[in-house]
Length: 365
Image (cartoon, rainbow, N blue to C red; front, top):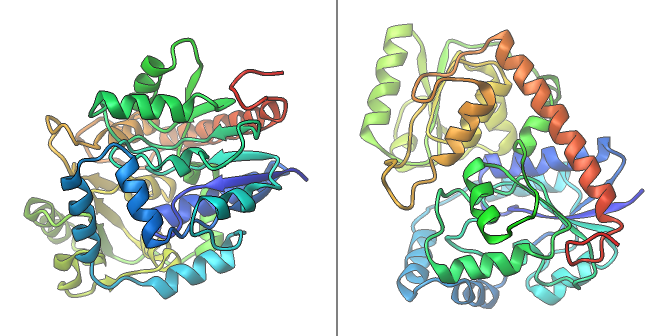
């Protein structure tokens, strides 16, 4: 079988990131490919070099360092166990030469999903800058996460990084519009996040199908008082116990919290929930996949230049839910998800096949 070398987020200890990486590898196996996650664990020197080369100001670099220090303890062991047991990975790669060696035997290089193409950081390694130009590359649904590019300099960097790809897809319509301006004449597809490439049965088989509990699961990536008030009022109105999936300070302090869940604990709690309230794209995505009523809170103001609400807007478009309203399970949503799943699998299979005949410049031989 042909091998696809994958670049995506693996070690940010985020359940959505880990589960989308698992989904993409599982989907590739179903298409007859051997997946190989390139296990990028950048050294401190590599991290600093990437931050300085991505067009960020010194203030942004300093803010990144401080935010990472302030994250607090995470469930590193649980995430590492999930990656080790559920994914196929290369040897650890601390820098570009190691990534180049790990990718050398791959037939196609594949950018996975999540916000690996976010212009906030714009790490060239997530565009395979370390690989020879003749090695074919494809992107499957990476997210830019923004509605507009923040600077002309970053637009030039992004244009240079994406140009060599034989086939390009992104996760949101807003990202496609950005790339269309940078790559006129190129076809840019919008594809569903990899988690949608698997069925509900696939996900329940992974975590074990739990009995539904009278719980309202919250999964917040931010601590906004209005979101907590909404969750509390909804739980009280519907007679549900609040069950926070806790990665923020406020969530950890609440009764019934599951502190720093690993991906399987997170998935099992979502599957058992009666209702979900979340400000997370993947929280909302899994509510849709698992057939849960969900209230999606917007984490940013829509007039914020740094807003990443486009991810949520794309999800509402995919499901047919009315933006700003809660998402409810229905046969129509199930049909939409099934159609998107097939569309994503068909595009991925075709893109990988055609990339085998690409010369690395984006033009077929």
